[in-house]
Image (tube, rainbow, N blue to C red; front, top):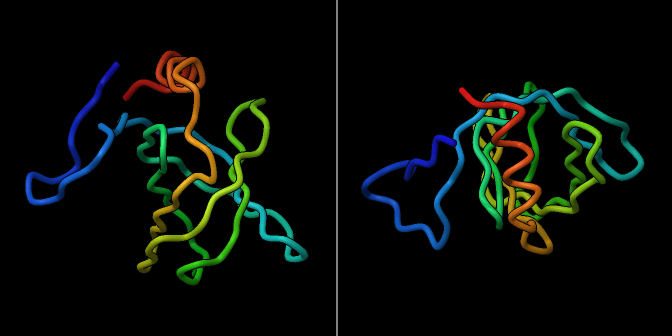
Length: 103
């Protein structure tokens, strides 16, 4: 498992797992969009996407055959979006993603 802090200048409550996993972001009443999950922690993720999202927007992240994860956009820039999960992920989910999508 490759666990790395993102940036020495950023303080994070949880370490993030660097990976590359295809998935989907769903917008209520707007459909699904293909994405690439770049890193994830128990409380959030950084996602590569061609779509633009707005801070505070509610989305649903789906990776592999896991249940959709409700999240909120914390930041957005061209090509990437950062989300915070409504509920922290269980360690078993992170272990599954690490085993399936190591970089």
